[in-house]
Image (tube, rainbow, N blue to C red):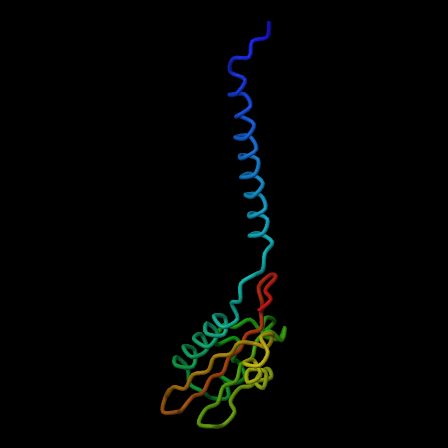
Length: 146
C-alpha cells in the first residue's frame, strides 16, 4: 500500500524553490548590470572644481609674469593631467589673455554635441583686475556615454 499523505506539501516546495532561484538570478543580473553598466558624467562637476581651484589660487596670488610662468606649480595643478587634452583652461585679466590652454571653441559646441567638454566660466574682481576664467573638462568616467 502506498502512503499518499503529505505529497501535496512536497510538491508545493518546488514552487518556493523556483521562486528563490528566480530571485537569486535577478540579483546576479542586477549586480552585474550595476557594476559593468554605464558610467557617470562628472565633466561639469570636474570643470566646476577646476574653476574653483584656479579662482582661489588667483585670489591668493598676484597676476604677474612669475604667476604666468609658474602657473601649474603655484596653483598645484598637475601638468601631465592637463596636457592629456582632457581639460581646457582660459584666463583673461582685464580683457587681455593671461593664460590659455586647450580649444575653448569646444565649449561653445558642447550644447550641440554631448561628446564635447562641459565648461564653466566665472567673472570676478581680484586685486583691482577683472578676471574671467573658463574651464572645461572632457575626462569621462569608465563607460560614460554622455
